Image (cartoon, rainbow, N blue to C red; front, side):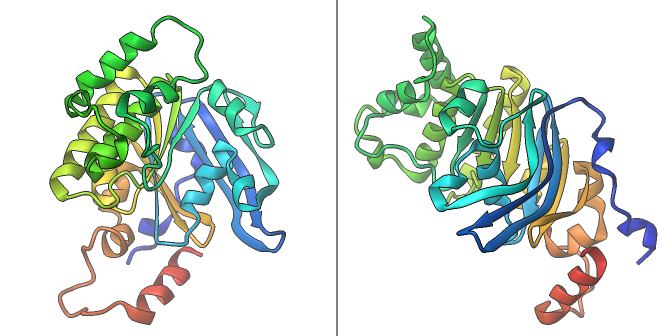
Length: 279
């Protein structure tokens, strides 16, 4: 493979002024387990940025470092900074980070099962003190008409409906930045297509910036403007979504393409080639 295809694009080349900047952070759990190893990324305002990588690469930890949720799992940022709108936010309590305009849609939805759909939506607006909560609920129903029909407890919703509710709850906070952690998890292919179409609409129509963690690299890159690839706690490749979709390494290891018909199993070769190319 040509060496030029492996050249990492500098993070600063995204082009737009960053809404969020993560600068060389390290994250340690239980004072001993190093998970993020000098990770840096930028999220420009108004864009969808995908954060991709294998299980255990540190993607969810990255989102928790941004949203202030590391303390709930005995984790902490031991080096580096997270800056939002030009101000350092690591060390700030999660509720204050929400008030500044960041809302995380957690992996597994994390809706309140013994509350109704309407109550879950109102919960998303807990930081607000304006008179437009009711109109915003109606706007959420316009995006997710099925939720209007569900008047019982949220725990009885299907997986796809719960994901819609989780996104709707995030919308109710009127965030500037939504962190989405594995929105396709457990959903049928048809529902995945519907959910990601709505994510794209949110970005285009509400102007919400989105940092998207997703195992389904193909669908994530199809709606993203820019992407990062993580391995073992750090960024190993970044570039425009279009560039990543055509990169041979990304096609081979994340999009299920390349490698030739003779390859039947990656096994140790996959890990070795990844380390040799990127780490």
